[in-house]
Image (tube, rainbow, N blue to C red; front, side, top):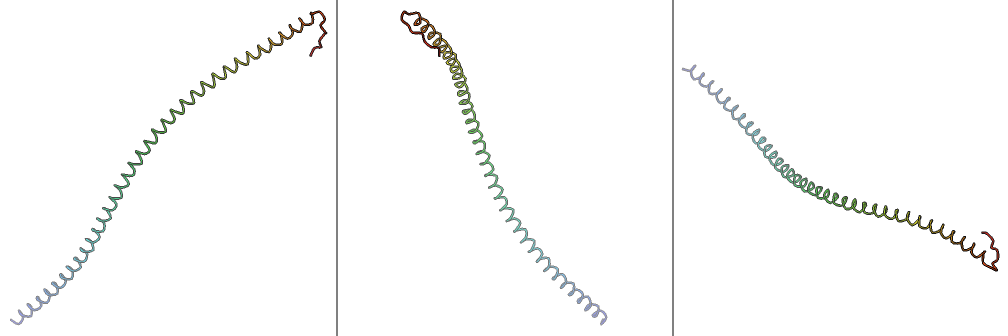
Amino acid sequence: MLEDLDHLSERLTKLVAYTQQLVAERQTLQTRLAQTEAERDALTAKLAKEDIQARTLHTKVTAYESEIEGLRHQSSARHAALQGSLDLFKQEQTSLQAQLQSRDHEVTALRAATIQAKERIDAVLERLPGAQPQESK
């Protein structure tokens, strides 16, 4: 019976040691669990913050895209208006160029007619009685 008691004492000692080991492992696991939960909470908070930032950036990108599209429309409208003005100025320049060329021809014709009329007047004046001979210029 003493042997049985020794054996029982030995088993109880092993059981106490095993229980203490399990308690220590439990504490280690609880500590790791707490750390993991804290890490999870930190990552969840970071993810939420980044999600807010992503939504904010998406909103800004959408606003900038709308602004760019508006500016493109304005640019196209201005380009069309300027092209129209340019076309009108080109037409006006062509018209003025044609008028200038016509006036140049008229001036040339008038100069020729003036020279011819002067020659005729000079010829008539030379034929008049009492006319003095004129020197050619």
